[in-house]
Length: 325
Image (tube, rainbow, N blue to C red; front, side, top):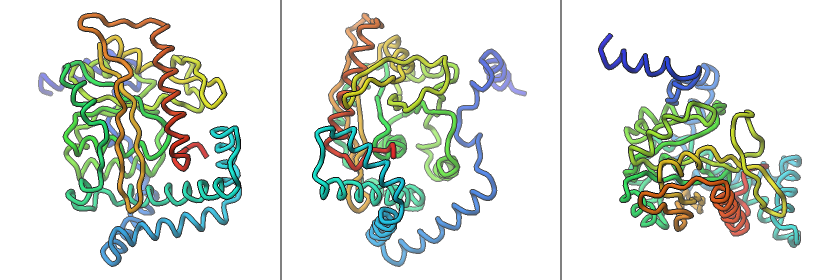
């Protein structure tokens, strides 16, 4: 054992159980899932070769329309979510159109997600439209890292990969329980994209020291705080008003960012027709004054409410990107 390996082993031993398993490759998809997803990937790759990405997009919309027609329960759930977003009500025709677009968007995003690593890099880069990039670059120039507050609306799971391909050193804080598809695709992405392999993957219920380290390394750290339920009593939350309701959103990563003097921004991912994506970084919610890193309950409450207000405005502008149904 080398000195470096011994140091890493000792470092991991000093952390709580489960704090060191932070790389996506350490949790592998099962054999059945790998075979199933592998067959689907081969079929989709062949489809793209025959009919191009536009043909895959139309295939996704066709599947999404079929799902919309036959999945009554999910359609009803999404209708209830729309009712919470638009308490003033929607015209029935508009509500049906939004729900159908939701089914088509999620199906297309999933198909694209499955074969992302099999596409030429230049084709991927041409499909990224980056709005507000200057806010991110200015924040990184301060040298204390950037905390990007994401949300569970739209395909936020592709944001880290797109950012990494654009040259940013990223880290993601996520829930430890990942679905089989996400785990399988992360294994493939790690092998195909060196940039993605360099992305740090941390867990919300793990030891926070690595999150501090990511800000000290001037990384872009992202996480979604708008949880539907709190997984663990040790996770800190803050009440916010959103869509006329009071909800509890997580605050742990935000508090670490404030202690590190990081700039705090809010960002969204918007899926557009034919597999184009818009990365949207809003102007900073908080830029720390030089040498003054304040973490007060009032500041946290204010930032969390502004974050919730940003989600509300975004979802009302893109109602087919609600991801809770």
